[in-house]
Image (cartoon, rainbow, N blue to C red; front, side, top):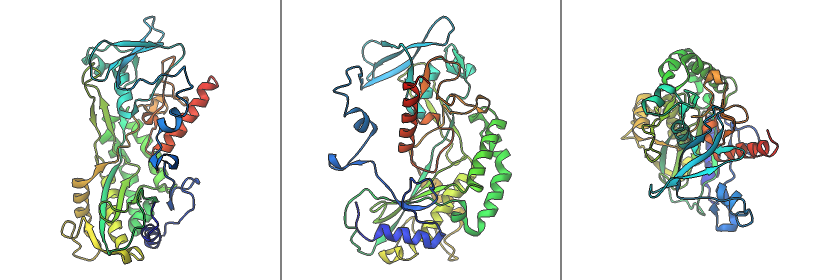
Length: 413
């Protein structure tokens, strides 16, 4: 952890620049703030990151004799009863190096899938759950007609901006632990209302552009309307500004667009479980995502010049003024920032949405108990069930989903 002046200076400067409030608890129910954040670290284990296996499995695996974890194996597909009941009686799998025989494991109650937003829809498609036209083209018989399996993919994008240090002592080591979550109005300032108007007027055309990644244009437009309402009227944070000491320079800020409108698709290209699915993310497929990304990056340039953070810096290094010029003193042109963001962004690796918990007429794949539509005993518990991105990180949200479903299963729900 850091004891130097940089994180406090970031918090004070972003408040001065945008008017965002500082709160003592980022998990207190209002994410639209700047706050010092908790980290998933185990101080009993030399400060290593505490993962789900480390926190949930390791403490009990020696006493849970009815639990077996097989690593280095690859699931191929679900095994369905042949009587038309849509009962999954087991799972077929093989060693991850594709050597040796196939194995099958059988279930008495439920199959619980947790292969993630890329892996879970691929397994389902190989198991005959998906779009019949796609499955038949690969020689796979349709068991359950759910054409949106693999659709609705959403991923966040990140830009890294840096400024040189003036020699201050950061006083410690990572990870950093202060983050700002500004809303549309705090990012765009006087242009916020015009941006909101553009958003509302564009929903129909956006839904038309992205309809191949949804159940239909009308279904996606309904989802977009809900998303726009959250952004415009409920003022949900649209971007995360993650202060990062030492990356990409001694003073660093990572810009994440949180609630993208772009949608993508995960599709298998073969029934072979060792053939990776074809994933189309469509980064910045909707221009508003790039507009928010570039405007937020431009805001960080201004942040680097705002005291007290500016007092710790000898100037911006990334992207730098030779890459994104500031000829008129207004931070640089919107187009220059868009070009830089589009050419240098990286994925956040937070894919979600490909087996969404929604009404079926909107493209849902699982119901409110995360049970696969039309199947008797298949449940999905991973990021694929989240219908839209959230104004937060995924890990604690997914732990909460898993805890909720665990209670459902234990109570026979």
